[in-house]
Length: 469
Image 1 (cartoon, rainbow, N blue to C red):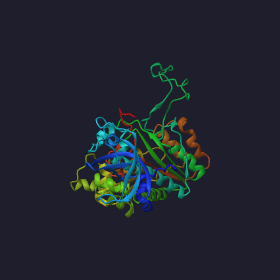
Image 2: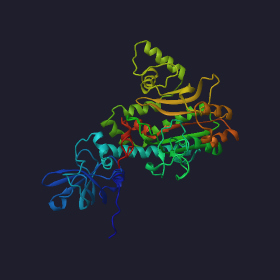
Image 3: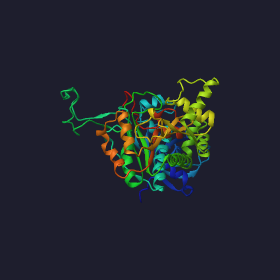
Image 4: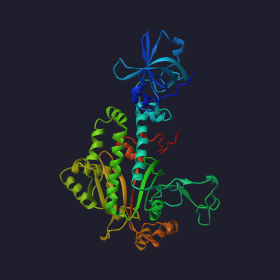
């Protein structure tokens, strides 16, 4: 007799024609309950938030056979799928054969059937994907990655792979993780006391990238429309619910796009991703909404249903100053030239406009050297997309295409020309207007899942003093 092929639980639930057929399912035991006649096993294989109920007739199976079937154990079950008589599920499986692949000692298995705090689950990040919460979060994470590729592919963008090891600091922030093969206790120094990297692997100082943007711009000036999607690294000592040392970034760069097209691309992109989640992750979103954030679905639909406000920075400051004059208190001061804090951004979105906001034309002093300078000599064509509950979710700009202006600005901001000569070359040879932006993948996931800590939307978070697993 031919061996039964395993069917995933998600497919069992979605295929009515399987009812009354003999099938094979495999997965991990979420719980087991019952009486002296029958045992009910909740089985989950990670393919869906929903468990499949296995019904075990205790007159057919010995206690010895079922003793190792405890929470966390991995089993294979062959049985007949029937319409369920009880509440909570449409179908259930009447077990004929149960095989235990792996046991989980209930005295030491940490995920027993009870509530666990998210803080505790971070300590056992190797096991937390088995919980309902993190199964849902990571299935949504997968779907968001698919949506990102789908969006850009449909619009003729090319997925471009930028380096993870780099010798340039895109943001000029200096908060980079160094990459070296040298013995740190025996560093060679030159006469001036600087470290001599001539014997190191790359022969110069190298770091993990903070952004693929500069290299992405090079590609856009050849291929037209590109996007990068990969890990980036920031050595900021920020222990907040919104910062990671290792995170993923999506960075489109488009030749011939000016700031208006860049803003529209950002709005279309983020709406597409949220719509994808609503269309493809309904069960997981419903679960997260019921457990963590009752307003989640309402907020996702709010973003899709509203045009994003375009607001110059100067006007935004005036609105915030007027709010302060009327007695609104903010933790951080507000004045022209200030880099807005999350509380300011959220006020504009949640209280003043009650819509997502794209803030533009920031003071050049608080933005990077590569942003296109406006004619007023004070501001640059930067843009930040501001969202409810999060604040800034996207940051971007029209890039400065003038070789002279870009070189001058880099000098003013202390970016050495020897480090970016190749970047400046795109302005020397066939320069063109172009724009782009960066979206932190985990920030998007915070919004889509309703989770409140960024450590809970990436499988193994890297934060100050934490590089476990």
